[in-house]
Length: 257
Image (cartoon, rainbow, N blue to C red; front, side, top):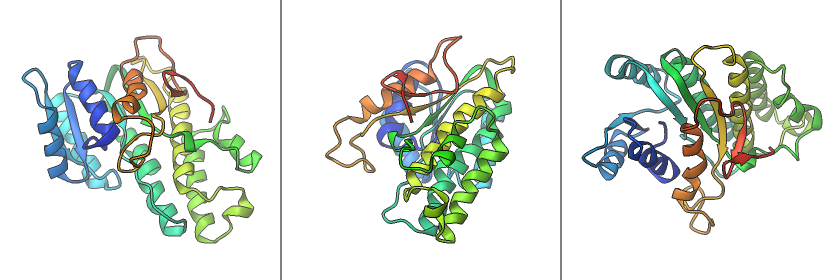
């Protein structure tokens, strides 16, 4: 799982390991991944630290090779790596989308052939993905049942370009790169679920809102603990056969966005 070295990601990794899954603990810094794996270690757990910057094609490829050669594939993919920056400009938009959306997209497409039957893919999203402040026609495109991956990719690329050209307001976008990136993750879960519906591996893909959590990103005043924030992503990662796919969930229940 990505972004597994602290906060919500660390708690998701802890929960997966406690349930008997071998967990690849991925972080941008190998030392942080090693420290997290050491913290989670127990005699009956398999934890493997891994350096992964999701924006790096080389590091994504190295992870795919590791999963293929050492593990023969994977059962659960959790996208928790994420960034949030102060301010709003073209650099913030580009860097936020590069990690939060495009990193998740490219890693999923690379690892999808390695996902075993009954696999689960979880996007750790946010309630800030809600689109009430967007232009209605733009917001509707993200939940269009005909939306496909090339169109979704183009939409997010257009957001970055609109911010660069300072025309995002007239185009109907909000001034929140983080919110747009998370809306992209939610849409990605829905599109992938539709595209995998006929796949005989019965892979389920969903997005989760952990709530406002006391983490480095969420701040000390947030009402939820990291353990509480990990609850819904863990639930989605361990869904039984026939569970939902393509949805956005908070507190183990469908949520609007």
